[in-house]
Image (tube, rainbow, N blue to C red; front, side, top):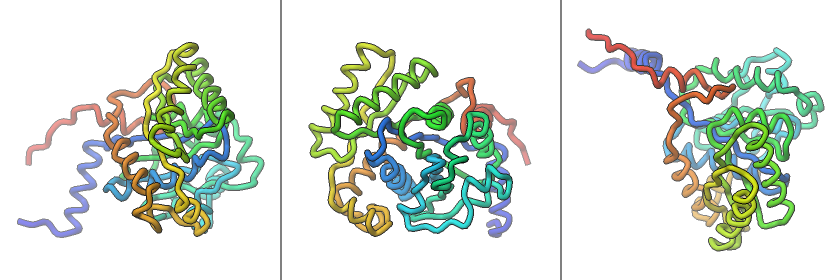
Length: 295
């Protein structure tokens, strides 16, 4: 006998309760501003959503947010209203292209840029209260080595460091990796080369950083891949649209789909790591064997 839509929804909801769904959490960060980090976050999120995943994008550049600007969205509320207690996290979420859920932040609000680690921890914990069925959370951090970058990177399972072929970008990426590894114990990072002029340049960028980290740090730097220099990417930014949305056949769009497939293939962690993490309860509960109900 076929269940009605109402009872099917109830059954699906009960299944989610019985076996919580772990969420893959990816921080996208960079040592230096201006390397295209937010553009990477937005388009990677949309590419993963287009692949069938339920994806949420957190704009964690709390004082200089621009995910909403990049997508031409006009949120009524943002994370500043959550921090002040005026709105819940659930109430500020808006929808972007391909069903991407966006958690917008504020821009030009000094207090948001100066939040302390305790406030960051409260925000991270608030995600555990969300009722959304999610597969992926992408965290677009601020650039640099601020407290917020550290808090959100540590609370994520995967850390993607965006670099481009500029000495300052490479130096600052190394400084960020050094801070997160030496002072906070992170060992695994993914290097993503942006605005690369070719496959060779992307790999050489990765190798430049690896040569230094191999000498001075105990870390593993995976080469995630590259996004090529593409005029269509700039045109999409001017239109306040994602390149995947307006120029789906462009070289940049093809690259984002490749990166999404790679990220989808990363293994899910089996255990919590002992410090504050996004959706840690879902990760813990998903590993437990639930008793079967015999009807």
